[in-house]
Image: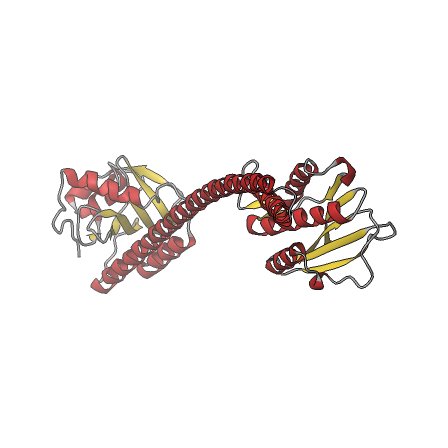
Length: 386
């Protein structure tokens, strides 16, 4: 049995398109692969030949993705039989190359290598391009059956299946990478929008606070004026919390320690000289922005209470009490809490606000004396994750 042609494929621009198809698999010059090596070993055993190759025909060379029984990685395209085999739709079969006139002109047949037996099954893509061959080679002439040729075609199809799987995997990874990049870009846009919203909220709150203070002055020394002053103070505190949210670049989290230091420095400027100073002892802790806001508001309320009802230095601290928990404390050096003090029973708005904010953090409130020193101490214990 000997077949030299079974209808050549289209020429002209077809070779340009074929090379483009080869490039899309991105397989040339890749490292050895066990899946392809097993196929060439099986093909060699099927035909009882010493050499089996998965070849890919480039524009000027034939590169071997897998080679069984051969040490050469590639050869020039001109002397390669695979370059002729890819012009066929069906396997190209030479049972004895020395009795085939066209094959006798090939250096692999006429030269030192002494090729006598060759079968090359084209590696054909789904859109009809032959990229190379799965070929079996011997230096002795051999007979071959149609069944063996059919088996070689099946093995060539398995080679293409492996190449298609790798192409699909690369495309899936590329799609995933694009999706991740799009998600990251969307998150960055959302973060910028959040910053813009917080900036506008801060400006609106500052304006509201200023208007409340103006209205308070218009009412003179009345109960209504005192309530407006209190409202203006709370609105201003909320504005300060938002003012310090975004300093520098962020990744959806904020260094809570640095944030509290900035906030307390700002709050210090609101205290009268007789209301003491604020000292800050905080650890660095990266927390989501959504958790920073209630913490900032809690600090603002507790500092205001300490300035109003306590005395001396106001101390703000943040420490990590366990791998999953933080403790935020505000203490003063005043006379301490009255006997039987219950924050839940107070009529003031401040403790009710603090209780609501602690609930948002899924935390708990501890209160009592300031350790061995005079004064009161409030501690909010909250989990790292909300």
